[in-house]
Length: 203
View 1 (cartoon, rainbow, N blue to C red):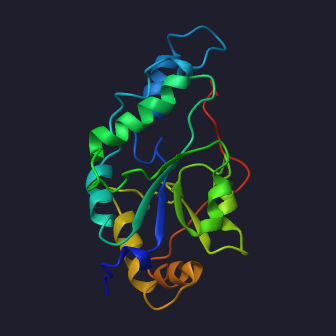
View 2 (cartoon, one colour; view 1 turned 180 degrees about the horizontal axis):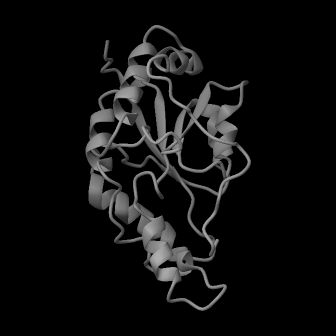
């Protein structure tokens, strides 16, 4: 049964790049025109006008009825504009007012593992920057790797899977138990290797 009490809802943390934002295809295209060794993620303003991933906006709006939503993302250290542009992107697509699901709920850090101690679910496409730390058995936290199982994307099964987890969490305070109960049929691969991931050529 769905809960309307946000204090009882699971915290759901969403990465931005390649989860909410269609980042990599744009960066890869820009990299082709850059000198060898140059990084497209350091271009000022590159993060401001990127398109959302398919069905991301609609999916987040659905999940806002089931979860306490947060943004947990990383921005390039050598591109200060990226930090501002990411906030502007969220405000553009989800609003800047108090009724936004992400109103004053954005965390930017190069160590996402610092946040996992509060508990919850992290949706992130890569294990880096502390994302894999969310599998710590000592904390009530889970990392679901966006798109590793091709069915776990916004346009496919991710939203109903997350809704089912939220509903199962009403019967247990342990998030891992709720995820396990939801992950019966069909059976999803929640994440890949926690230490390796194929990077782009320019990274």
